[in-house]
Length: 119
Picture 1 (cartoon, one colour):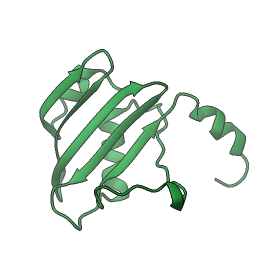
Picture 2 (tube, one colour):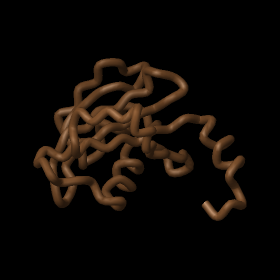
Picture 3 (tube, one colour):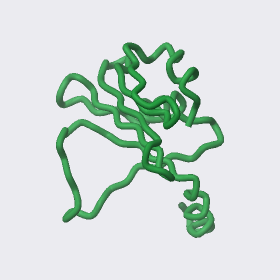
Picture 4 (cartoon, helix red, strand yellow):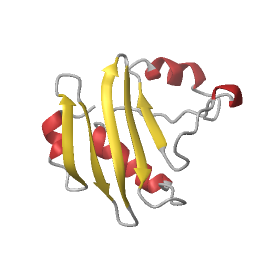
């Protein structure tokens, strides 16, 4: 995950509140071309790093390109980030248009285990 000063200086973000600088945790407002919304980020549950983003207007969802931009705002170019689709029995939907990005340094092990399977 990028350092706090890089995150705070990104022109797509405003009103950033950092509640744990050592753990790179905070929240604020994200401004994209189509919409404005809330963003929450943290790395307080090692080894996972997490960013959630919710457009303010209901019924709007981030596109793949917007998620890619969000990834670039919060993570370095060489860091891989994933999005989970949980089992139906474990699915929790508190906010219908909130999407989550996750990074685990061990994701490289997952990538290596599926390499060559056309993924």
